Amino acid sequence: MEKTTYYYRGTVQGRNSGPICKFVTAPGPSELADLQFAFGADTRQSYQPFTIMDSIRFKKPDFFLFLGDTIYADREGAASHLPDFWAKYVTNRNDLPTQRLLSETSVYVTWDDHEVENNFDPATPLVPIGRRAFFDYWPIRQAPQNPDRIYRSFRWGKAVELFILDTRQYRDIEKGTILGRRQKDWFLKALSSSTALFKFVATSVPISSRHIDKWGGYPVDRAEVLGYISSENIPGVVFLTADVHYAAVSKIPGGPGLREFIVGPLATRINEKVKGTARRFEFFSNDSFNYGLVKVHAKASPPYAEIDILDESNKLLHRTRINYPS
Image: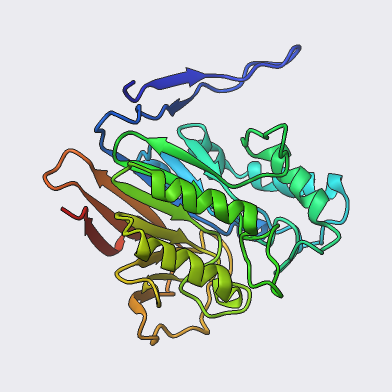
C-alpha cells in the first residue's frame, strides 16, 4: 500500500464541525518509499506561543515524533489531581501553532518526566494519574492485556521502522534497568528481526549520557542493548532523543559506530550549563530552540538518511548523512 493522504474533521452534536485536518498513512513494509519526519520535545506552557511548531509544519513532515515533556505538570502550579493534569494538556493544546501542526500531520508520542513530575520513577505516587491523563490526550492505542504499555513500534515502508521506548515507568536503579525485562526483551527481539533499512530508536532520555537520570544511571540495560546490537551486527540503528535542552550529535560510548541525535528544547529553558566540550560530541549547540528533521532517501543507490537539526526559524544548524551499509 502506498502512502495515502486522508482528510477528516471532528463533529460534536449541537456544535459546529471542526476544521478540515489531514494525515498521511504509512506505506506497506515491502514498498520502497522516501519519507521525512520531524522530532522534538519539551513544551512548557509559559513559553507560548510555541512558534517553532509552525516551522515544523512548513517542512510538511509525514509525521511528528514527540519525545516527551509534552506538558510541564510540575511547573506553573503543580498538578495533583486528574483535572489538574487535564488542564495542563488543554493549555498546551490551545496553542495555535501546535493546533496548526497537529491538524496537518499525525503524531507519535512518548512521555518523559514532566508529564508527572521532575525525574519521576515508578514509585512516584502521581504516576497512575499522570499516565491516565497522558492516554486521555494522546493517540495511543491501549492493549487490553497491557493497558499501561507505551512502548511500541511502527513500520514505514521498506526503509524505516520506528521503535518508541518508555524509559520511565519500568526503571529500577537497583537492578540497573531503565526498560524493565519485558520491554527490553520485546525491544531486542523486534530490533533484530526488523528488515527495515533504518531502525530509528526513540528514547526520551539520552543513551550517550552518564547522568544518573539518563541511561548512564542504568548500566546493565545500557550494556546489554549496545552489546546486543554489536553482537548481532544489526545495521542501520540510529538513536533519537531530547530531554537535556540542547542540540547535539553524540557518539555513543560502548556502541561501535552508533550515534545519537539530541534535539530540543522546542519551547522551554535552554541548558546553558553544558558547554559541549565532551569528546563524544560531533556537534553541539545551545543557542536556540530547535528540532530534528529526518529525511530518508530509500530509492537512492545506496539508500541514505539525512538528519538535520534546525532552529526555530528553520536555519540549518547541522546536517548528518548516514549511508545504509552495503
